[in-house]
Length: 215
Image (cartoon, rainbow, N blue to C red; front, side, top):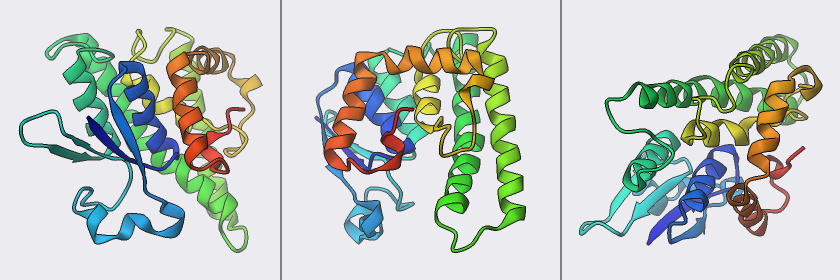
């Protein structure tokens, strides 16, 4: 059994998608980040950074806890031997390249853009201009890659699962008509039964969470 400490944000949904794709036995343990539950001492004993997602895998002899979504995706995929090629292969490094791109660029910039657009008491033009430009650049990077391959690392992988929940065009000021290959990729992933189950479970936890909108 795997415990998934979770809220249905872009980062939480990544791990939910992989668990559904793998068909592993897990339970969702909601951590309501809108009410500050991630700041509790009990949760921070599991996630030292005080952020979701985190897991506790009770399958080993000594339960293993992990935080940071990229580390969790790698661990689960490696353990199952799916959605992450074997160590030492060029294919694995390509998956890691795009997974780290998501962690290092997609989440930081697109999440900041959403915060400045949705939560700032008043518009801050400099920040909005900077972050809108970066969002456009990132969408173009993804569009260019997906013009070459059906999934970001060639085959469907944890890299796609990591990126997909963060592509929220209405929140990020983007028109998918400008990115036809990205749009086609997104539709392919949306159609996967495991992705649909992950989003349905997210709606059971927090139906109003904005990351759950699949435009």
